[in-house]
Image (cartoon, rainbow, N blue to C red; front, side, top):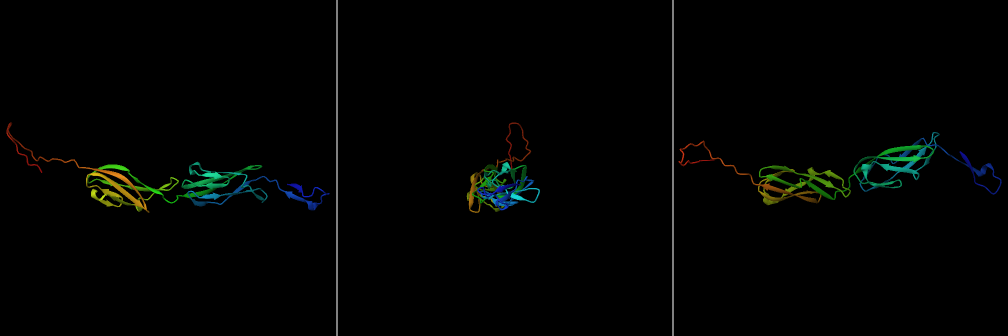
Length: 219
């Protein structure tokens, strides 16, 4: 500790002095702890240093803040703007008389969907084949998540065929547009249905003399 005088014009007395503490930090507290936010939202952190004698002081402005690289986003001092959905670790570091660090968990959830994507985006099948489609929602931060179970799949009426949830049984040949819709968001995919190659059955076996006609009775 050191003493600081508040009176420099007269002979100081004990009342003119205050005590300032110079302490070595042994630990660091980071708040808030284990937070959950949505992509695009901001969160501000506070860092408190602690010495070995029960004293603590705010070191928010003097600390360095980081998050796992895969989380994306940006920092402005102690304030983080989130980007990528996931469960991330935030780390704060304070360099005083000693280096101390602290960590906490930050869960970033996806934001509101702005589009959906269908897969496969283009495919070719034969009449009678079954093709299965999948749908993923996407927010404005490129986070995506499966919404296949919530998506309504359709195909042009002229294509015929039938749907069982997200599986389509092809019928008529042609190039058709498949649509998927979820929560007012729609996207499309192209499906080519080809003819089944015909197979001839000539029946038989047949026998005949060379040069003589043979009649076939295939099914």
